Image (cartoon, rainbow, N blue to C red; front, side, top):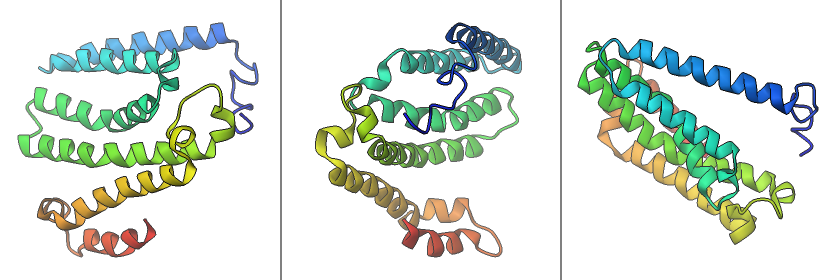
Length: 188
């Protein structure tokens, strides 16, 4: 891949072995931090952290080549910090259920937006992915894939515009949310 050939492993600046060791060290460190954070009362946080590490490892080991799985994993990993924050906050008893609910609602709208982004990125990589991955653009074509991604964004935008929940959640003076809707919607 032309854009990625200058990355550390692809350019062999760092060996695959050293990159794997570094990744393993960071994974172990993140698990240690997750257990430390769970001492505040969130026992689900280490399980969530281990799940995320497992998903990332399986992605790297080949799940990314399975039709639409890459898109769904990237969508999940994009919203995972919102889920983690709600787990930590509720466990520490310093984050109200209202805030946790907001984080989950943001995750629900963030997931399809990230999936749409991944579909559009797959369109850019059609030539590179041929023969190695099954992506939506390779299966249904670039134009249909683009329309599917745009439809996902339109559904999310429509939900955010028509739902009073998001208007209330982002209420401010001046009403920045209304301004972002006016400016952002035509951009989509």
